[in-house]
Image 1 (tube, rainbow, N blue to C red):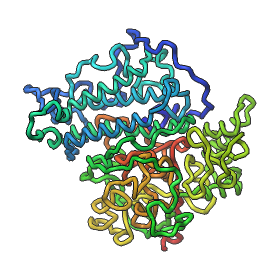
Image 2 (image 1 turned 60 degrees about the vertical axis):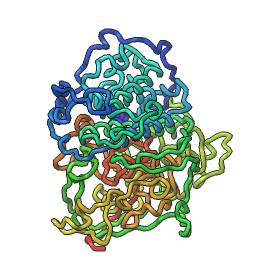
Image 3 (image 1 turned 135 degrees about the vertical axis):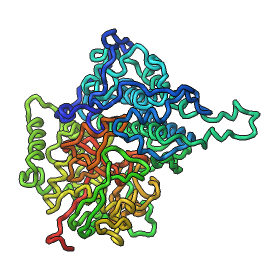
Image 4 (image 1 turned 45 degrees about the vertical axis):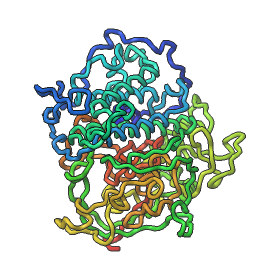
Length: 628
C-alpha cells in the first residue's frame, strides 16, 4: 500500500536513508502545461493482471433511477476481474450510506490540511512522506482510474485536469518518489493547488452522480413525500464495494496527512469538526455521533472509568494456553482486503502477552540501562540500522542539533522525537520522564510516563523485548488475545462453534459493536494524540488486554506474507502484493486511524526501520514446556 512506505515507492526507494529536510521553494511557474511527450498514455498495469479495456455497456445503457450517468453492469465488471474477487462481494449499501461516507471522509481530508500555506502543502523532500498537494492529486487519480472509469466507462477522457499527464503526476507506481517534488521536470507540468482541488472535486461529483444525487427539498418544494430512491435504494454489491474502496483509500491518506504534519513540525490540525456530525464507524455504512469540543491530549487512565481507581499502568501479562487458531478472513465477512484472504488454521503454543503496550517510562529505563549500547540485544539488521544513524550523526558534513536529528529519525539513544530538555534552548516546558521531552507537531511537551512509547522501529521494539527476556508477539498470538476469550479458547481442530474458529471470532477486541471514540478506542484523531495505556477500559479484550485497537500500531514478529488462498484485489492489484517479504505485520490502528479501517483482523505492514509512523508494541513471552 502506497501509504505505508514513502508514497508507494518501490522497496529500494522506501528503504532509503533518512536525511534532514532542506529548504524548498515551489517552482515559480506552477501552471505550466504538459508537453506532448509527457501526455502519451502509459501502461500502468505492470503486474500484467489488469484488463486493458473498459467494461462493456449493456445495449440498453443502464441509467438507474436517480443516477445521472450510464453505469457499467456489475456482470461486466466481474468479467474484468481475472481472479474473481468481485464475485465474492455480498454487502449492499444504500445510496444514503455511500453519500454520507463520501461527505465524512472529505471533511476529514479538508480538516487535516486546513491552515497550511501553499509552500507547506508542497512540503520538503523527506523519505517517509509525500507532498500534501501530491497526496490530494493521488486521491483524485485513484478515484478516477480505480473507481469512476469502471463504474461509468463513458466518462470523457479529458473530463478532469486536461492538459496534464495525470498518470505521470499522481500514479503512485508511476511517479518516482523524488519526482513528486519536481513534477514539472518529471511529468512536464505542475498543476497548481486550485487545479488539483478542482480535479478532486470533479471526480467526487462524478462518483456521486453514479450513486444518485441526494434529494433537494428546496428544488422539490411541492413534493409531498421523499422519494425512496433518494436514500434507501441499495446499490449492488460490486458498486458498493468499489465506492467504499475508494473512500477507504482516502481514509488511509488522512492518517498520512496528520503524520506528515507531525514529521515536518507543522502545527497540528483541528482534531474535531466545527459542527455536530456523525462519522463513519465501519465499512458497512454504520455511523456514530461524535463530540465537537476539543479533547486535550494526554488522556489519563481515568478516562471513561469513573468508578475505577486510577492506576499508573495496566501492567502484567495474560496467559494463553496452546491451541489452534483460525487466522485470516472468512468469506462471510463484510469487508475483506486481499492480504486477509483466506482463513486457515494454525497451531499456536502457549504464550503470555502483556496486558498493555510498553510505556515511555518503561522504555526510558531500557535506554538508561544502556540498551542502545548493548549489541547483544539487537539483531544484525537492527544493529546495522543503529550504527548507520551513529555514522551519519558523527560525519563531518552533518551539522544539525540534537532536536533536528531526532526529528529526522536519526536517533541513537532514544526513540524518534525524544529530546533531552537541556538540548532545547529557551524551552519553557517542565521536564517529562527523566528529563525527556517529546517533539509533538510544532512544539515540545513533557514526555508522559504512562503513555505508550511511540515512533519506535521494529528493531528498537525487538531489542527492548530481548532486554526484558521476551519477544514480539506473532500475528496469530496478537489476534488470539484480541479476538477470542478464555471461556471458549483454545478450540479443537474442526470445532466451528469454538471461539478460536473463524465463525466466532470477535471483529473488535470488545465484541461486534463498531468503535466509539469516546468509550472504547482512541481512533479518528478526535483525542489529538495517544492516551495512557490504561485508558479506555470498555475497549478491553476478552483476555484483559487493553488498547488493542487504536492508540498505536503494534509491531508483531510476523513477516508480511500472503495467506493460503491469497488473490489480489480488483481493481487495486498493488494493495499488498508488491510489499510481501521483509515488511513486518502491524495490528490495531493508531490514534489517527479512521474507524472504518480499524478491525482486529486488519493486516497493516511497515518496513522494520520506519519510525515516522505511530508505532508501539507489547511484549510476549514463551511458556516453558508449553504449560501455564
